[in-house]
Image 1 (cartoon, rainbow, N blue to C red):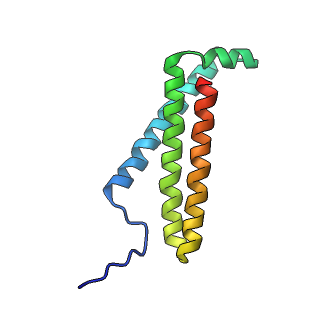
Image 2: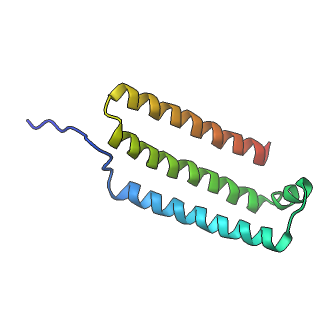
Image 3: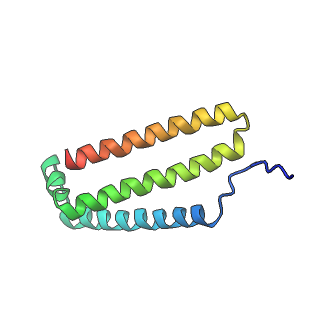
Length: 114
């Protein structure tokens, strides 16, 4: 019987593809947001609130936040798996990152729909 030992973050095509798709989503959102800022030139908080008021903008913003969290999770998980060898320390780092990312996603949802 061969005992398989996972020694690195080699998750294959799925994670590679997720990183690329989330990067494209974030880049498109950034271009659209920059275009809006250059056209509208919001000067105060009420102008920013008005710009984020539409349902489509809130959905796109939340999709950006989800993409950012997923992208960050895959990247940090791979870094942890490659460079943190003690399993307990690696697990603690992964749990802290998961909690932080989930908190940020929930905070964004509260801001956008709260």
